[in-house]
View 1 (tube, protein in one colour):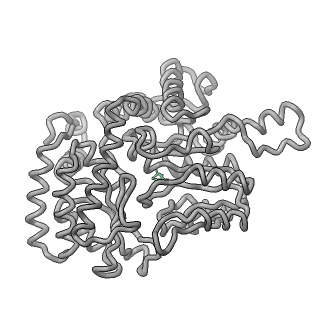
View 2 (tube, rainbow, N blue to C red):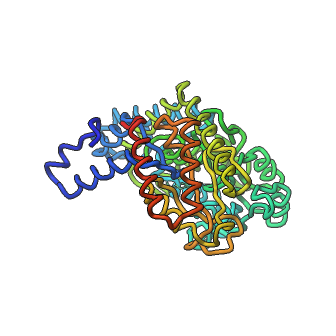
Length: 436
Ligand SMILES: *Cc1c(COP(=O)(O)O)cnc(C)c1O
């Protein structure tokens, strides 16, 4: 058991759930968590999300609510908004989105009409479901014209993306991905948007922590709308944040009176009204308090160090894997994640390798690789990342050891003896690093 986290009240009232939470505490403590979209938040953030702010209804925005009893939550939400603006250098912030997918839905709802064209990266190339995948609302309500990465390099090809944008004339161009290990040229995306008369949107869910820590270029202040989840590299609670410019540069004010035109040009208002009342009901004030804490943690100098260490760790890990003959998509990484191409070993073994690694205490996820010769249910890739290991205090030295373990398992993924042996070594390594 971890002495710093106790759940006494749960233990008394619900032993079944208590046991499972305790097992999860043990699991998170004793494995190498290498899922790049996860992180381990501070105790302060755990406390805020477990606080009695969960009891409060607060539909509306600070000082424009529908209920009484708002003194404290109005203050908290205002602080969260001001910190978000300062942290990212944004003109406007909305801290209410429940999570990344509803935040993206709110942005589209604010900027687009049903049937408008959107352009994001295709899911199997590293895009997100909400960027226009066929099974998702984003391709049912809007027309999706996805772009791809270059077949040879695995990288974004901005000339091809520009050509597609000129041909299709989308209303919205989305950058930001879930499995792209390289730097994203946000400025170039925005310039293409300007050229074709589209809004630019950056979904920085994966890399927000790197951006505020100065380890990846920022899409602010030029991008029209920026969305991020707060629970990935940013290391806050599960939730999301929308940042945008005050003015809608594509507003069509033809035939509107002065008052209507003013509203039409107010991008910040459009985003706020899309989140509430457009899409959501009462905001989760306990999570908003935790977001405020996360923003403040991310302003500290330690967080800059953290962000840079995430990238250093990923680079050393990538080198170690490649030294062991493992193939990486794009041949390396600039950020927190690595996409391993398993096809030289066998096509479609992402799942088997992920299970073999979990048996050895190394938690990752299977992933498609660009132009995967197999299917999404049987992909040929493995996605790994360093945000959690870096939170726990691991550095280059540990990355070399972990890179060797991962290589051994990939190269011999049916060897259960090897998995057992490494699992023990993983446990011993984890015991040396901080955990709550
Ligand atoms: C994680 C992620 C999302 C969705 O966030 P949820 O909170 O899981 O809904 C959206 N876009 C990108 C790029 C992401 O990485």
